Length: 561
Ligand code: HEM
Image (cartoon, rainbow, N blue to C red; front, side):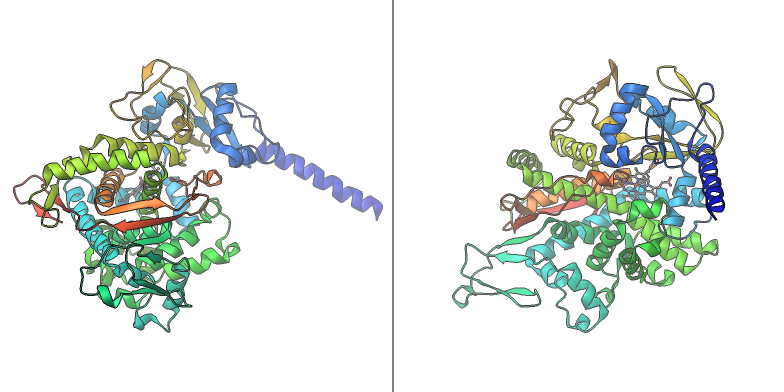
């Protein structure tokens, strides 16, 4: 018995040693980059999880610009030279398709047929002339969302008071969505705020004041909720369009947002291949997110995006199933969700520092005043083209600074053949077929040799500035979109147009003592989520100038939204 146990233990030890040398240990071949010191079993997992940027910058100081890290059995060569970014992006042996496939399979459980062709053709639907029309749809949806917020309709919708939904599963979803209550504090009036036990609150106007024009009220809310109603809703409608019956179903922006948040928490685990069954919360959210209109119904929804229409048509032609089309729709929402996250941080950063709020408000106000027609703000309209939206240097710099600090993305590729990679300075590294290779933008974004006081948020940092590393000007100092994102131009425009409208239409403040920060445990997400949400209050301005987006693409036929 004793001998048998010893023999089994012996075999186990030998097996483990062999497995270690087979899967974890690596003998460097000539010309390969050095390996970052780490744990014999986990490799660099823990160091990366504790503080990815600090770990990578420290390792770069020890090992040089190019080195290999190991996450358990996966070797990833890090190219941490910002001047080599363009070479990295152009290297044909560094392939993104395998990575996208892994996300599709592990997180969204489907495979996209002829994926490269589909993504590159669908990507054109948010660029060129389509960028102008996509903006038109977004601007119109944004206007509706702001109008609803100003009139309090969004409260009604978001609080789920529709009688049609009252007994359904949907009510549960909507109640979950709104478990954080929005509070109206009409401090300047004598209106009475009523909160019912189910968190539905409404204002009973004071009879003595009902004949007067309704006064604006301060509303208290979670910032996530505020950003969801003002930005996620228009984003959702710009992607999937509208249908009059939406309010009877769970295909509703507030339900989708809540469920998406729930699902997204597990993104990094799912992506790495941990079975979704281990995360019941993600599975439950996934089931709600799967309840979408059929592909036929989706294509005829009013304002459905060209991207979704093209992708759906493409997938149908490649005999993909309805379930696969639903999964692809979620992938598209997933990439757009980054835009929401940036918006969250923009609103937060505006409220966090009164100086920033004042500076951007002044810039926007000047632009609006320069464009407005009419003598009073009530009957005034200010028209903005895409060029006009881009002509605000502080808004532009502020947005870049937000992306610089909140970006958590790994720009990762699979190495499809043994490759000699030459860095910008001429150093040559042999990178092994089957490995992964990555650029880690946050390591550049927090590099003290590029950015003075990199941890500090400086809203005007990017105004008329060139950044240098080792005495050489940097071509792309902020690379939060990687090199392949087809939605970059659209996302930047959406965010800028949102900021302009926000500052024109609302006053916003954080409640006393409310602060949050990016959750560095989520490095790997394109944009980091906050560690926790914050409470804020907002006031819809009385009769702001009406802002209109003008689609002036290549003709005299301008469309206004
Ligand atoms: C602030 C918002 C956004 C951020 C930060 C962002 C970031 C990224 C990043 C980092 C990648 C990986 C690229 C690479 O590794 O080179 C990516 C890919 C992608 N993004 Fe975005 N994105 C945003 C918005 C959007 C929007 C609005 C769309 C669509 C309209 C979009 C569509 C895509 C697609 C389709 C891919 C996959 C590209 C491919 O497979 O070649 N993104 N995005």
